[in-house]
Length: 225
Image (tube, rainbow, N blue to C red; front, side):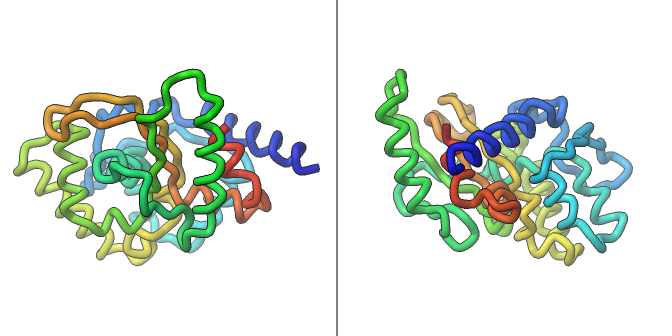
């Protein structure tokens, strides 16, 4: 039964990855803009259990708060912040309350033994919604990922701070939407951030969603695999 559940989660997660938005996470061509008439809707429209769960988390939202989040870049921000600010697997915790830490650390350690490629340089880190509250990390993310000038990165970092304060629906950045993702980053040199090593990023919202639909015990393992 557990193996069947594991297979089901792998299928669900694969569907979310391959049947989702048309644009990949590594093609940042329209960073979040607080000006509503410049928001570009995302083509996502999936009815997987995890996406249906996420949809319920928007119940009661205002039209403006919802419309801003149709810009797909906002769903990547915490992930990108983790890419540029988290550079060690040490002292990481997974899940809003660290409830998946032991499970993921063990799974990651076991998997590294079986990978064909050299795995010493691969680390695993967490993306927490609270990272959006750290203005300096948001500033660095805009400079490193989007190549913005200090002035432009300042503007957008301030915009994020304003958005989180303006719309209570965002729970000051702690809504699961902001970390409803996972990402495998390949080593790359960035003009601003320098060499960023291979890393796997787990968002709290993604883990929370699988837990909510009954797969919290094996979803982290399935996603890693």
